[in-house]
Amino acid sequence: MLALFDRDMREGARPDGPGARIERVDGVVRQVGSEKGWSGVVWSDLDEAGADAAVAEQIRYFAGLGRDFEWKLYGHDLPVDLGQRLRAAGFTAAPEETLMVAEVAGLTLDVEPPEGVRILPVTDRAGVDMVADVHEKAFGTDSSRMRHQLLAHLTADPDTVVAVVALAGDEPVSAARMELVPGTRFAGLWGGGTVEEWRGRGVYRALVAHRARVAADRGYRYVQVDALARSRPILARLGFEPLTTTTPYEYTVGHLAAA
Image 1: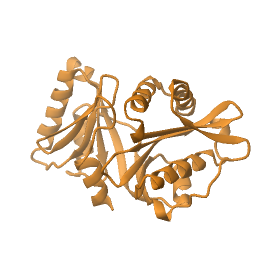
Image 2: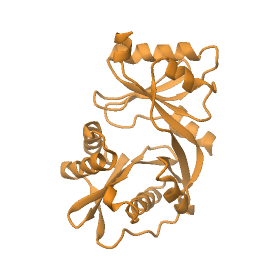
Image 3: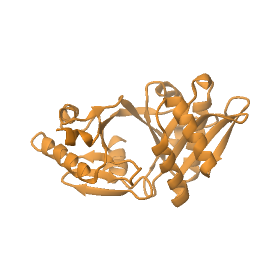
């Protein structure tokens, strides 16, 4: 399963939205996003002898574009000390996540939201604003980039993204999206967040099941999540299995100028 995921979603990566492109060079697969999009390394095939040079080359490349970027490191990537090498080169590690995957046919999908909560498909700017507002409340982070990317994605290629928001009455309390990459077997579940006062009531679980049903209807065999610690037990109860860890290593191009 892990080899299949690497082949479909990393080595064979496709752009994740409008204005993005995938480049393959010297054992590295990277995405160059739009000005407000995500840029980073999604896959690498490196050894101890060439790893430091490859890392330095990616820094030079993205600095030349003026882009902050991320090196998405998985627990089975080589060399085994690649994380240490990234930190030594100026990257900062974000919290570790767990790659969890499930075959749609084996999931528990007969999950409904709690009483008084309804799930609304997001198709326009007003819906995107609700998703972004929930994201900021749930995670305490700025959502301007996500807001721009999601609206651009829904506008330019709506068949490859599904976004939903859970409403308690008229109040947005949870939101999430799913990315559907044509030609792959995996649908990616992203951005699932619930405001604090609504956690533990089954809203997040209902959004996972809702998106998985859509993935099944569209012919995807697997769904995958990069899960934080608080999401792992919920996903495990639905039928997801952990495959490996993944850690975002983030680089701000200002580090190069400061050096």
